[in-house]
Length: 504
Image (cartoon, helix red, strand yellow):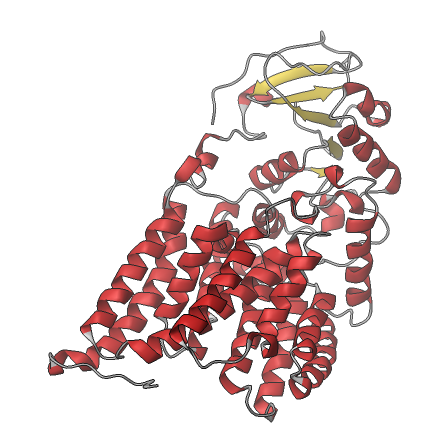
């Protein structure tokens, strides 16, 4: 089979085709996050709290009420990087979120390119997986797990490029560095055992054993950079066990930690089946799937997703993306000239399709945040209704924490519920669990109401006609969709309802 077909015609133009293909791919990946941000997009969760923490200059123990297990920043390197950027630039929280979304997606999108000869194969893989399951959208959230996903794709592509021989010294160093960076910025060092097992299941024993020792070295070095070489990885493991082990039902967990539902993994199976059929029809001569660690990593993640769906989100889909990219690259190498006009037309077509597909504002998925209202200490309608100095912000809704902390990074209060409920004090977690168990019934809030002090506030989501049935507190509906409760003040008449302020 001819893996280097050539084209005829336009000889003066041919030498620029390769360069133009790379430029188009690189620019397309950069333009995607810029476009969705132009539509008004801001992530809904962790990117907000990372940015707000950098602006606040506080530790998590000064922001949240935490249990005794959480002592060290779980995403140590990422929060430190944002803090340094804030100190250098004095950007506000929104600018730091924009940096996070753009920077991490570009890192994820560009991390694949050094290992490819046909970068348009990567665009085609992004398009296929977006249409199939919207998988690449997850890497537009500005969260540091993107670093780990980019690192595992680079690892798998390193093997795709050089896997016919034992790993060399520079490859060992590179693999250890990938694990170290992931450990330092993201913290989930233990999940890197998944690629180790994937290599062993693929019977790539030299690579698997080498990766195991690189994993040990990388975890040690990444943890050492935090200044807590033992406590940092130990805490990460304890926190992970708490996050998935303390809930009596998956209904009270964060959505991404819940089990995969019926049909959620079907598209992955269809995509994998399509790869097998394509390989047979076109007679591609690549690595056997059963000898490919990317296949086994995707398979293991697919199975583990029936326990926690993040296995598929963060490890399975990146592995499938690598599989699709490599198969499509083999096809392009065999059937399309590298210097032909047809190739340039294909690259431009794929770039347009990927850009339009990912930036499509279907169901207002990117612009929906424009109409959200947040609790702000600068809102006149909320004067006296935000927590006072040293107060506690009570809520059973994590989105209220993300939005309120992002809007008020310098607020002089702490939050009881933050970005993971199991990291609250045990008795408060039990109250939170009971609230969700009872679908937000007002009576479940009673233990918190008894603990509240005059400086504290309780926030509950709900419409104007859904005033919380907690008579011990007076309530304000100063922001659409959110009720704020406080203990009645003795120096002023109780205020049960305040008309909502205009959306801001």
